[in-house]
Image (cartoon, rainbow, N blue to C red; front, side, top):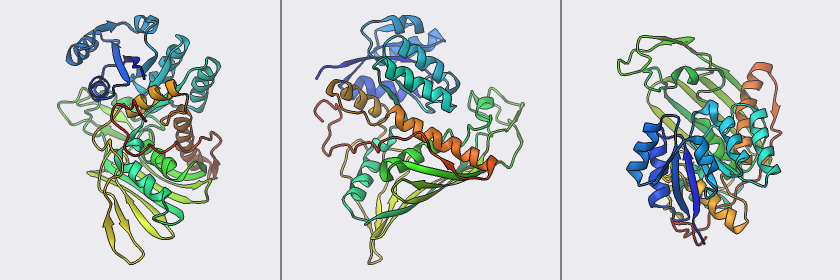
Length: 369
């Protein structure tokens, strides 16, 4: 199987791990060019990872050899850049969030379909060794019939102001629903299947913050907090299973949890924000057993979804971290906010297929799955 040539737009912090994996790990990919609105950032990444071409965005999109563009731009630019990529006749794989509105997400997907192109989207942590082992445990019937799940992510907020896009993060609908819950909702869909409807509450405690970290570019400023920082939701899956999800950034620390309840056992799932973590199984006899991994990719494997898409383009099969999956998760997030505002259940209209499990024994280069 040949290598697929990839170009990257957006050379910020997250680009480091993508370039590390795409240049040194996934042999199905050939990272050929990088671009950024700040040329110095692109040049620095190119030198760091041995990439020959440093382009402007337009130059990258005009390169006929590039088949997939990895979009790591700021969230508010994702839709515009995705459409430019598709308009240039190239497949796109984007960082989360896939889009900020349903209309934008649908426009990207319809544009791709009309042009015979593919759309992929992070997160791809559900393809990691931890969650794929959990998928096998469920599929093999170890916990019987899954009927419920409980997710929780309580963490320190960005009140120290270190994030360069802090004002944008505080806007309605962003944080934590658009920042952290995609890992959890994507994992839930991968483990339990698509969601049929949601209900939820979304509030916040603080209405503004004063940035007190002297290292922050926003030091000393007061930033209004419009986004709901404390959210809870209930999800009903098409299978009939029911899940709850609590997500907040109003306190301190980092407390992740995901549990799947079945008629024959309880599965304690590792942090969906990571590719690894302990997997424990509560058995009917009351014993808790730690389960070894059945799958690889247990370290930071960001870019795995991109590599899977590159393979799928050549083999003709569906790719797993798909735009349709990301669109489904977007509908869940927006549905929670809508439910909170209207006091009603919100049907999830944008449906998707449960992504296929990764085969056991899959090699890091993805050339032989």
